[in-house]
Length: 323
Length: 199
Image 1 (cartoon, rainbow over the protein chains, first blue to last red):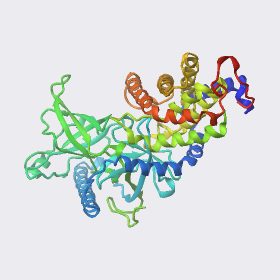
Image 2: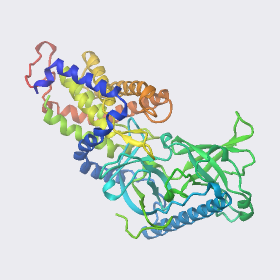
Image 3: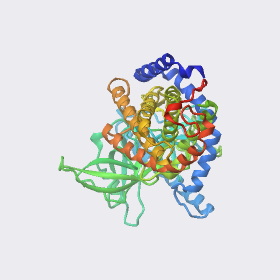
Image 4: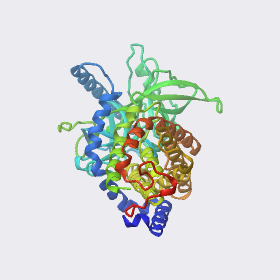
């Protein structure tokens, strides 16, 4: 190729690359996505085949692995129903709260959701790291902000804006770029089960609510109350948060998402369990908890995207079957 | 260099990096094959061909690794072309500068160059991302954490990539004649550089 031997063209190309590198994202947004899709298109068949081989070589870490398919499906269905129950209870708690503060009342988001099965075909090794590429996109109804779950109710991330027709990017929950996440810690009751009643607040009120225990919940549970906490993703499947010292949180407690900034379908989904809690040296009145996600986003092979469907009741599932 | 050989091999390598290599992840560190291919090309091809190859690799890497920008409701995946192009050019340049004092026909040399290439590309990328973070990006292109932590993580990735590269490097070395490199004739000697018009 004659251009290869031209020093001048090489210098111009490198200067062009330097210029592009220096420009803000907004200068490239209009065309870079299309070009990336075109460049990625020839790799898709090979990537799908190699993803299958990858999963044969190293089994993905998914919930209930090793169980018979029927039992696994049943347990995932149970978890899904548990998630919906948790979400409904959170919603009831929120409505009760809003009824008490009529000035702060706002209409409920009536959007429902529909499950859409997707295969992880790309895992973002290299820089920028962390995003997962899945094989469904806007053509399948996937939209920005849709929650991504595994095993019925374990949330692992959300769909980033800027996906293509048949390809979307998932921001893992433990990615710092996911932002702060409001959650509730669900104490284990004496019989080992947990209760999601109430414990959530109206959207937007964040750090000041961390660690606040709800006395009505305490009465309902009989033992320990749910605790609000704001989590900061740390990578490596962990998120950390701070609590007020009186909050009754123990390792092993479940943590559920309860953030108004997320889609309604994400509310009540399980983030993980409290791995450790301890004193915060910098502030003796507060404590720090570490939450570990139960599923590793970098080792899941198939995920379910809870696609938004307008015009249905909160939490209702569409009839459309997964892909 | 025969570009009709390079492009399909690059496509295969990038596909493997995206979909297959995570199978070998250890503690979050994933080996990659593109530094191997780039180092191999930079060891044997002419300077111009190696830098062009680096730019093509970089464009493809930019397309495969979107950054996260500000969206209306949720962060937006935005493909930013440029950083990987320069980073790969830096990686290839490192190999081009060191190849004169290396015994090239050895898989360990290719692995060593893979490490050099990956490390310098990573340093260049983090430097560019750091500059961009000052004025253009809501969060640094390298993801979460500090730049120093990203460099530390990438050093481990580069080492792991170099170790994994040994076997495929042997495969690439055995196909040397197919590539039509300018400096890889049969037992090339420094004094009789062959001129290849199409390189």
